[in-house]
Image 1 (cartoon, rainbow, N blue to C red):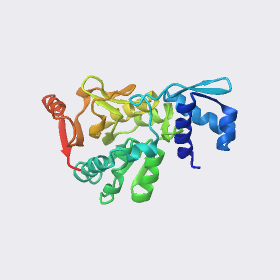
Image 2: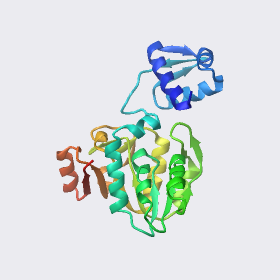
Image 3: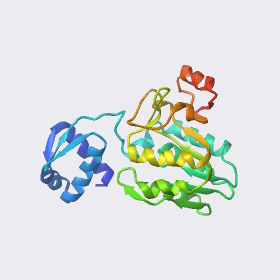
Image 4: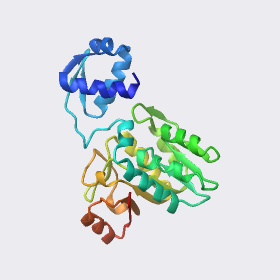
Amino acid sequence: MLPEERRRTLIKELAQLGTATIADLSSKYQVSTMTIRRDLKLFEDNGLVTLTHGGVVYDGEKPSHSEIFYSDRAQKNLPQKQAIARYIAENLIKDNTVLILDPGTTVTSMIPYLTDKQNLTVITNGLRTVNALHQYMPTAKIHCTGGILREGSLTFIGPVAERYFEDTFADIVVISGSGFTLKRGITDPQQVDSQVKRAMIQSARNLIVAIDSSKFGTTAMTQILKTEQIQLLVTDTNAPSALIEQLKQMDIEVYLVDY
């Protein structure tokens, strides 16, 4: 059983049981207690469970504040994400650009559409993003921040990753988020990831926000940037028209993409 499949099965079982011991889970899934503890720590970091001495208690899923597994997030609203990614890649990214990509699924979806760009330098803190860049764009100049690799998201976080962007100057940064409201701006579930994204934004001259319509009206735990800080936003045509009109009244450039 692959790790992500195990974790999906495990969290469903915990939701049914309510509580379990680490020893029992280790035996059932035929993995070490250390592996089970890592899985449970990931769940705890996202507010799903509480670890106890030798066991775990299920706290109940909090969709607006929890981190969905990457493979699940990648498939959610896939047509919208791909349409947004393609539009940005084909219309807003030029040759000879120093480009920062956040590690989110929407932004990473841009990579197959960037293959015709010449002399791109691409910077990211996402391990999956680096792998996709190497697969589709082996001739591009690919930079990765380094830092602490966070299991689950496979993103590099911490002081090393943040400091990388303090010393880096880019033309464009493209970021996404787990939620967006006018009051809270662009938000994400994890403070450690949001801190790196804020460092990304500070190091680029131009900011593009890529966010599909399902994120509108939801708020995750930490703020990446305020609404008034958005320069340009690309979303799909399902985005609420009233909110889009408010953004335009704030002099925010908005592109609506069919999918």
